[in-house]
Image 1: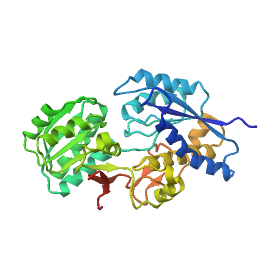
Image 2 (image 1 turned 180 degrees about the vertical axis):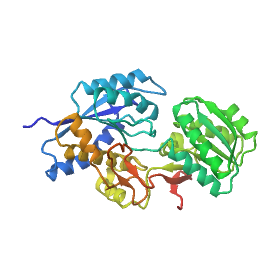
Image 3 (image 1 turned 135 degrees about the vertical axis):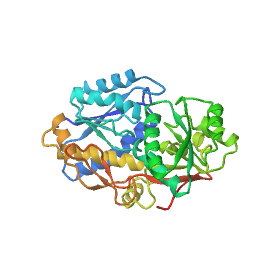
Image 4 (image 1 turned 90 degrees about the horizontal axis):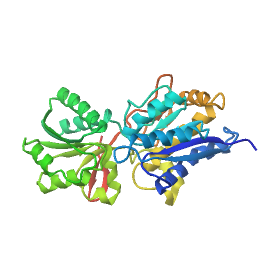
Length: 350
């Protein structure tokens, strides 16, 4: 029996086996099994898991160790990390070891010859979408609370630039620790500038602190945050997000996603998990199937040959693929504005 094709799964949010990675692997297997059934892959695919709690709660070193451990287990391809800070850590490792890697984080800076990127959010694009949304509401003064981290700083820079073009003033900005559990002083400072709208930008671990402080201060103007709003599917975070607008990765009108949900049945979960899990699986399956040879460089070439696949993420018509020097997988309107209302995420009209 031929040796299986080995694919590493790098979980930068856990120290060991957890249900989230198991669920992701199960969705990844759907497109892989389809390729096997169609004869496009002539041998099985074995997923090898690696763990290391990365930033902001852990360390960059943990991600480095987890990545190298997967490399040493002869994987042809690595999937992960999921957090932008850790994708930046892994990017030079992919180049150093010549291992094609697909991160599913939010930063376009974590791209390279061997580092590919499935956008699950975007530190660059989300802030543009939020600025345009607020401008369309007639907002002219915005206050910002952002994480004191690469994620927060990147989001803030792009929000500033787009707001200036739209005639929207960022009248007050303050930063918080990404893991803070108290933000009353910071929120009070921003609200003292009398903004017409409030924006939070960051990883989202600070949602209970920031949104709790906003609620306690009685601010009821337009409120928006980046894709950290996807944490609202967890009740611990969701109870703080009512009324907040955010960019998500799934649309109710995406027919590719609807077909995926139908196949998953009871295994489907609310939110974008099924969408980005399936898209990751398509990239893995297609990269392996299109590889001209079963080597790491061959898989890199195979990924570059993926073109114009319908994506489960984003609005209907979003496309999935890579190319020569093109390392961003999603093309088109892949960010979907939604709002939390009474515990439900509601898609907003385009």
